[in-house]
Length: 228
Image 1 (cartoon, rainbow, N blue to C red):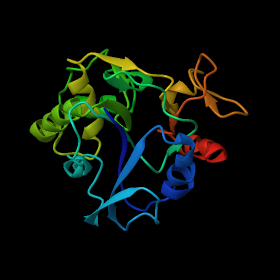
Image 2: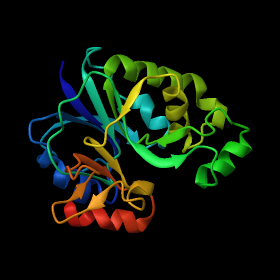
Image 3: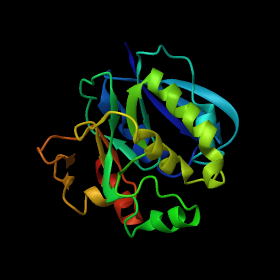
Image 4: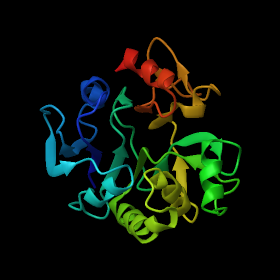
């Protein structure tokens, strides 16, 4: 079993200053591979798979996910422009690892209006887990990609549908909310599930989090720049 870090991105603000400038902090705990849309990010020291077209959107990007792994390889996927790395990846069990956003489907939040428009209540009361940070064996990645492809029309192929589809897929799976591996700042930072210290962002056990995702407002995206 090998562990790979996958990104699907083009050159946008934050890819270099956040993702690429902090990736060295992972050491040799993972092998990065970047699927690069046009315009391509600046030269990197790890494997790049050029696509030759512009970034499609958050949903359609998964059509370009590399399929070059063994079923038991561990695949870590993250967004790029609002992600920083702080320390090597912890040892991972060969299961699905997710990052909780500390909010709930069906609650009065940004998602509720869209769920109502599409008359979708299958996730009501289910915790929201982040599509921009997850890890799982490649056998599960293939199952997730198949599910996305089969259900993308349920939400009119909307850009944001990747998050809903990911959580819908998760509902029938066993998984772990891994707070050592991931920290999504959206509501976790406001609720002090993730705390900013002089060392960086730590979890409730005061352990440095390997991968921090500033999903949410611009204030959170500014916050991670100090620790990239």
